[in-house]
Length: 109
Image (cartoon, rainbow, N blue to C red):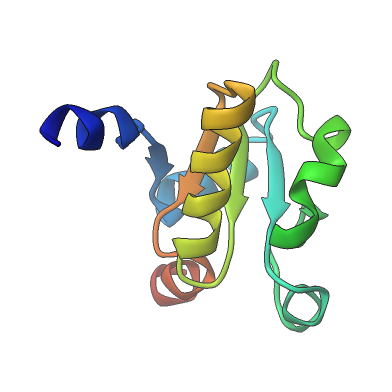
């Protein structure tokens, strides 16, 4: 049982909102992807592509593998699930979860 659980654990990179803000301000080459629903993206976002969670697999062509891709949602949960699935099924190794999502972003900035 422990071996099965350990095989399900996937390393996930994350980034603090303050560090991400610095990277954006310094024009670091990265991609932002918001996996919230379109209405959530329309209310408030930090830019990038809007690819709702339920459409991610239909939009793999929009997710590059050659540069950092920051995936975000409201709290960091949906984006974490998306990252896990993309890493498991498609072996992405450049995906980064925004710690705390948009809630975390709003608290520190």
